[in-house]
Length: 119
Image (cartoon, rainbow, N blue to C red; front, side):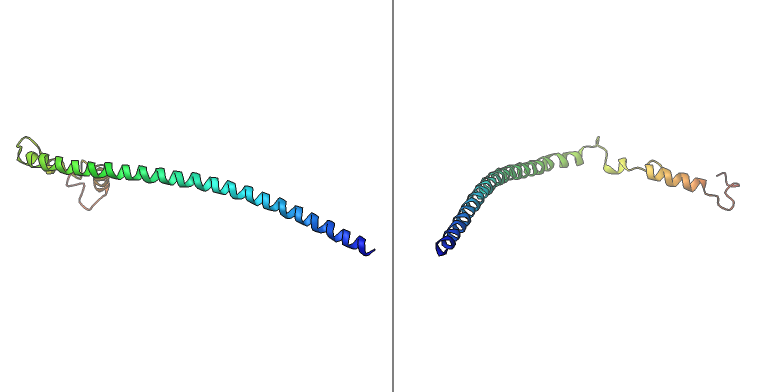
């Protein structure tokens, strides 16, 4: 009887050990998947950092080029009598879409004596 009890305990311990081994294998597989995913993310991060550096370089070169262009073009435009100034292009309140709406509302509003003044 004592031998049967020990044999049952040994069988349970073997079963527990098999379950533990299966769990370790499963966890190792999950760990490998996570490591592979982390490696992929690290590579994508490296690529994005390189692209960001390239974009930053292009932006800085563009800004420098625009500064050089403005330094040459803007003084020439200011001296050219054929180039209109920015004030020539300002819209009057009547010309702008919002001005038209306000103008229409103002014209449609009845004021005392407005009929006698011609609108």
